[in-house]
Length: 333
Image (cartoon, rainbow, N blue to C red; front, top):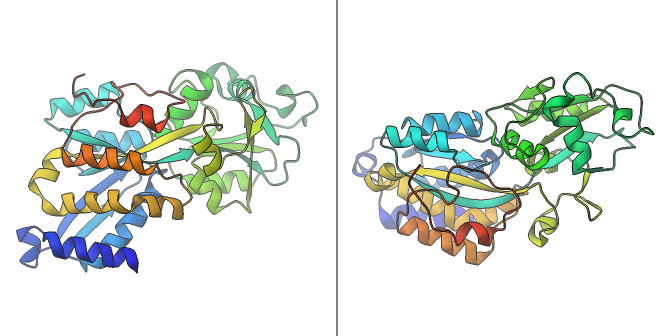
């Protein structure tokens, strides 16, 4: 209720675009990452309730890559992203005259999961994950006992995001050393709920997806502790904040079309509301909010309509939020 009142105040105080005020419905189009979806969905629900249908918001889940394809063509206003925009996507956006704001909104602990009947793989090293998921593992690393001899002589049923997923890009870069470097013989889906069901249905399954989806199904799945050389660390908000859950902690973003912000007050108001309330809503859906100082820096970037990306078209693993918000955005290729 408090958030709804805030939203009503934002809408009432700033006014909706003339077309909306005349009784017409404005549509804000959002697509992209399934990982960022729960956060954006929570914001949309609060904003929509207060706008009383004057602003329609649509959210697709075509994966980070799928969302960026639409975003670069100018087909959507906001792209949910679980990785930074790539060089190719930057070039496509520039070709189509699409300028954008890159806005970090929270942190995620990318989570490796197994079936609840799995009583052997409580902890796995990054090297073991690489042995399973690297391209050379296809057709050769197929059983649990190939990872550790004492583990079952049973086939590993693998589940993971599809190739349009930012989670796929980040995991493969963090674990295998290069984005998109992965074996292809696994059950892939852009819908994380399908992955949850797959791992839940097989005693010998292994999969990975965002922490929010694990948290929502924690009684149906078991999270694997990740050992990056300092002992096994389970995914949690505390571990992300402490910087100990590496290399699978990652920032999540929304990318906003600059022209839409400049020409459509309802888009500007929605993004303002998003940044004002994402700290509380991200925590509600089990993601890690940024520090207050980081949100202030992101709001400043938004207020200045500071277009571009701080990543230069390349993902980086193991970054802190300070690394991200203190860099200057660049619009070049």
